[in-house]
Length: 316
Image (cartoon, rainbow, N blue to C red; front, top):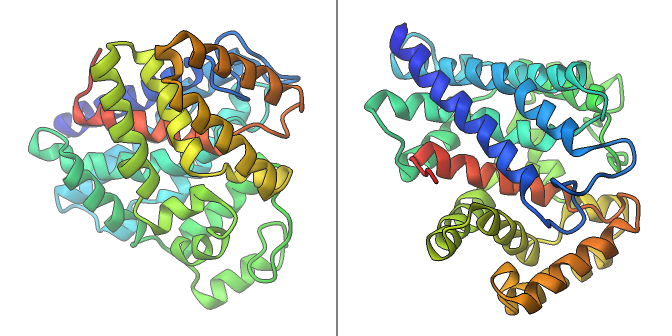
């Protein structure tokens, strides 16, 4: 099991660094970053969150390694339990509230998949994405129940109410057990209004097809990891109106924010003085709304994009 410990430790380190790089990226308009706090949630809370999720990510990676070794099956990776542990540890480790629910939702299946692929010595992105798909398609009803518990203790904003399997309805638990509902089933429903859920049913389309290649491209051009982080955030936001903003405000506001992100990129973002000023201006503008125009989903997707790059071997 020594090799499994070594592999899971590397994945754990990549996950922690990915969260730290994402939250430190500045200015990410509307988000907490290294020189921007919001009421009740500070930059330091996110640093604590990066540390807090670390054990759950390592455990998830080790389960993936055991799948690769033939010791357990894919439906025994306990994805839901690792998500619940990551969320619970976060809430116990800091007082800034729900700071990384979406990130944990994305990192856990990535960690399991990386644990599978790293048995061969390195992570190839194509292999990683193939294994992520297999992990996401082989969850269980127990995983669903654990994820529902994670959502309830995190208490994220703007959930609303749905007709079937509503996460806030106590009766949903028995219905999930009765119907044999797995995570893909519930994420297909919530994908209509939540891009983290959408990642689960599109094999992480935004992470692998938008965020990850943008991060590497911009870093290779700029040799600046902060610029790469912020541009990845802006690129994702410009192409995907943030679903957290849509839930807290409305779709029109989310589209408006995305259009402003696109205009910043047209001015080359942080690579040019004009784009840099526009970025700071949008940061100020969005933060006047006290969190209602926070592109929080975009931040989660930026973190998962950096995580993939680090798993592949990106270093700076």
